[in-house]
Image 1 (tube, rainbow, N blue to C red):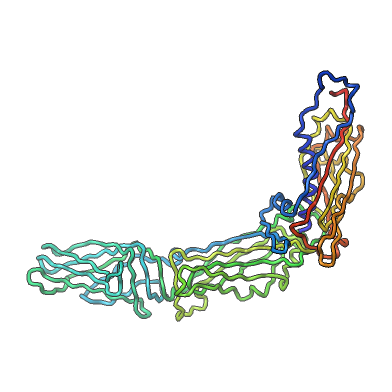
Image 2 (cartoon, rainbow, N blue to C red; image 1 turned 60 degrees about the horizontal axis):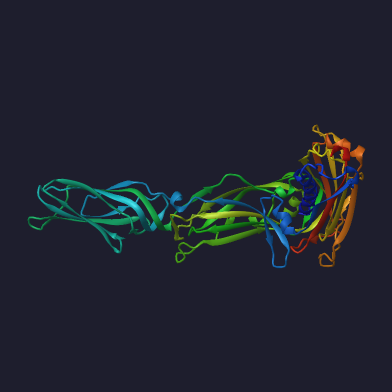
Amino acid sequence: MKKEFPLKMCCLFLTGLLISFSSCQKLGKIAGTDVDDWDPDLALAIINTKITPQELLDSFRTDGFVQVESDGSIRLVYQGNVISSTGQEISTLDDFTLPVPDSSIVAQYNFPVGNTIDIVDFKAGTLEYVLQSPANEVVSVVLQFPSATQNGQVLEETVVLNNTSSVTGSFSLAASRFNFNNSNNEFPIRYVATRQSDGQPILLTNAEVTFRDLEYSYMQGYIGNYDFNFPLDTVILDIFGNWKQGEIYFEEPKIDIIVRNSFGLPIRMNIDRLDADTYQGGLLALNAPQLQGGIDFDYPSLTEVGAVKTTTITVDNSSNLPAIIQNVPYQIYYELGAEANPDNNSSIIGHLTDTSKFEVDVNVELPLYGWADDFVVEDTFNLDLSTYEEFDALDFKLITENGFPAEARMQLYFEDASGNVLDSLIHEETPIIVAAAPVDGTGRVTEQVITTTTSSFPETRYDGIRYNAKIVRLKASFRTTDAGTSSVRIYSDYELGIKFGARGNLDVEAL
């Protein structure tokens, strides 16, 4: 994590310089003023600011988010997320037709094999019926489902056959509840057919019912086995995107696998793949004892329908995660699978709703606590100085007041369009631009350290870059306090003060 702060400092220095020049108006002659009276030097204050860790991270353009703890310590969190199928999608109800050969039967609902259902609440669906009478006279039929209710009443429909031998019709099952008996998913169907002429009951010649377009809002019982499959996904750690070489170590990295589940039944998640692409070690598998054997979700009970239960598994220093982070990962792969009722225990009475689901967050947390040694990053920026012919020389001055426990050595290389180096900002190969602030026994910075750096571009040197330099390449290396041998922690109240200016020598003949 130490990379991120110094790299942003470099970007600020360079960006401030170039943007300031590019936003200036072209210097022109001032009417009524004799050129001989001019001071040929012009001082430009480019940057004068103080920067906090939060500001540095916010402007780093990372996909992670910053979390500040109560003690002011900071961690960067990268997040991946998967969402399961809903209850409506994993347990569908097919259309089916039942014959009713007698005035009272026990029918069997065609749930998937292995499911033992006690209760289903329907939010949509239609029951269609066909009734045929042997008598060519008015017959009243009461079609009844004794174990089902609708709006608090026994579910039934009265049908009148007017001097006709058969009739078809339908009614809605919305807001109905069906209760099923024993392991065969059985429910009773009855009808009472009465001749209007004498009030005597009769048996129908034919009767059948069809359940069609069923949708449920709630289901209770043993709902069987179901596999959840998810595609391979990644968490991009762009904090390391510009790394070139060097070491970095985090004391307390962790991966939190957070499950939020509203399925009211056992679900076990397996981590089919969890590994990282690293710059130094290639593809490395994460070995964590916490993940062996799968993760059993917590789930709401029958009295907690609609509740969401959270299960968190933390992969920390008990795994090889610190070693993986030290190899500088740039993305983490994860592939998850899950199974409902994994032990096939039919004695477990579970439940689900049409909106039941589970979500899994895979959070990679990097606390700003550790050390860095010769941690090198590079980046390039476009540059155009050809429009500044008013200057025939430039001097730069940088003053930093560093309250961070890390030093930065950096260099800016001016290159032509083909990438050939024309010059560098400072003659020394690895100058110390920002000196590290000292820390006490607890790792807290005790005072800010002031560093002043100057660089001169006289006319002949400046001419070598202002017309031909098209690219600036930034190379920077970082090291924490005590030459990278001691871990330090970054706190939210740390500050970096920057004063960066340039003094230009005006070519008065060009005005």
